[in-house]
Image (cartoon, rainbow, N blue to C red):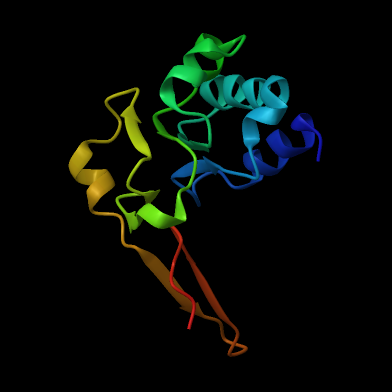
Length: 137
């Protein structure tokens, strides 16, 4: 989907969502369009932004255009997933991941209060499990 199409779609969701979560694969493999999207979100909405990346904080800082990209992010979850250090709490899938509060929109307590998983049972009986590395039944 092109950035302008995504922006149009987000415009139609006004008032129905609190924020935007960007995750992977690795979203920063597409840094330019992600930065364009985040700049549009900051200019045109009140949405919060949480970005998950496999890059650690130092690698993130070294990326070309990192400052422009991070200017559109409220919470950055950084670091590669390490299954041996599975943690699955406070938005971190593994204990080596770091949480960076880049604005004052959310607090550490807000992040720690996020449930490990969410289970939604649709009217058709379909079950959807989402979360930070939820354990599958």
